Length: 260
Picture (cartoon, rainbow, N blue to C red):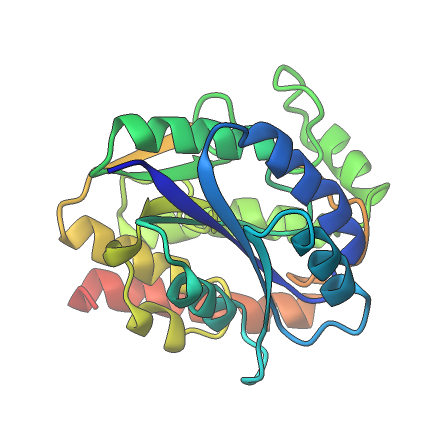
């Protein structure tokens, strides 16, 4: 059976970033049997019109207009359910995850059909937001680069520190346990991991289920790029940092203690 994959893009007001990302995906996925599903959470921009204009030419690019309450994890799950391919990949739509890495993940998956492939900022070849060159891993320079972008310095620091903390709690061999950039068989993923989560902590539960099923995970490095348009939805204040961070810690603790 030929390899086929659906790319799921959860969105809220990412029109300008979609205009950069989707053409990049089209270019990089040439020769691959793929579809792109934009799972939208009620955007007020012209995301719908843009995706529907693409659909006139590219029938494999569709817009999923969610009517349920806004939810990042459930947007992803709805995209998974919508997919009619054997494999699914989901990623951020803000331009932080490069299309050429998607192609690399697809090629690796195609050669390792039973594995899950994760894009990682914390393995060889990977780096966190703000670092323009892999050889320039300076925190001060990274902070300056993020400050000039549409991301937040707080969000960048949160991503790094929390990942280290969560790895300690979770005791996982996976380096990027808040990745949200993953490809695997559609059948590997279960609704419960998504519907019980508020935000990105769903990924810890997804990893737990994959690891408990003894499915091999391959991590590949990528440089997480800064947002070009729009504003970050991760952590724009210390209060939001605390609010968003607590469910991650709680989920990692529960998974470690109870394996749930």
